[in-house]
Length: 276
Ligand SMILES: Nc1ncnc2c1ncn2[C@@H]1O[C@H](COP(=O)(O)OP(=O)(O)OP(=O)(O)O)[C@@H](O)[C@H]1O
Ligand SMILES: [Mg+2]
Image (cartoon, rainbow, N blue to C red; front, side, top):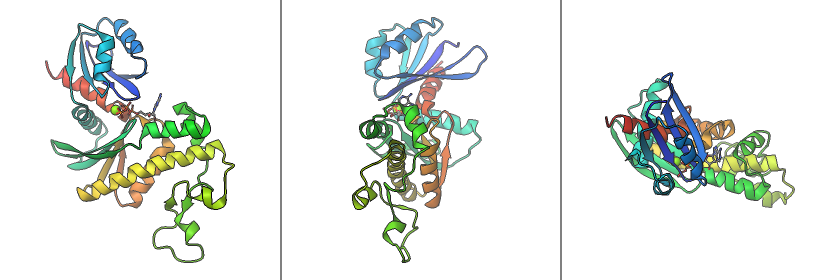
């Protein structure tokens, strides 16, 4: 392993990025509620000499690490954008401007144009909402299980679609759009709800709120592309489909980068590496 690593201590997950002996970029993830695991891992790799660090839990992690290693802090938004730019280049995208929506525990939305970038907004609806509501409503709290079971579920009897309201007449907007997330429950007196169906509906609620907001910023800033990143999207094809389809329907182009959950850790690594 090379002597520099990048760490993004996020609200839920702490992500690490580093380069191995074969000169390949590698990633690792730990839960942010157990920083001693991060400490143990760093101590088990004595070749690490320098750490690029970012994320809202930076101070909490530093308290546990108590390390003498050379640490370079970088503001989370700066690190994320650096990481995103690297991943965009790796995947062959060339954009002059775009909206970047980071779906972490909460969701943060940024505007990027050339070397300029700024945070334009966000919402508390994010990955924490997905896991939180899933736990409360179905008892399923494991992220991988939430994602797997949601893909087997159906929103049909829980969500209220435009076509359900405008029955027998022409709807003013597309019929398959959601008129009300969870809106069919009260109308149908539908209380016997299957966990998988609930999980699918929660994913759609989260995805649609985030997409609606992202599209508004894309229109305000006249951007064609919206780049969606964050660990909430990792191996989560269902959420990507909700977000991707809705973005396309609204005439914008969604971009999903692989390993996008590690953008902040990658940016912190690049920042520290470039200090030398
Ligand atoms: N192994 C996992 N354990 C828990 N949550 C996971 C896991 N993998 C993906 N997730 C999802 O990713 C979300 C966290 O995403 P991410 O790591 O981008 O956020 P964060 O950096 O911790 O938070 P923030 O940026 O808001 O401070 C979780 O809320 C959950 O929905
Ligand atoms: Mg984060």
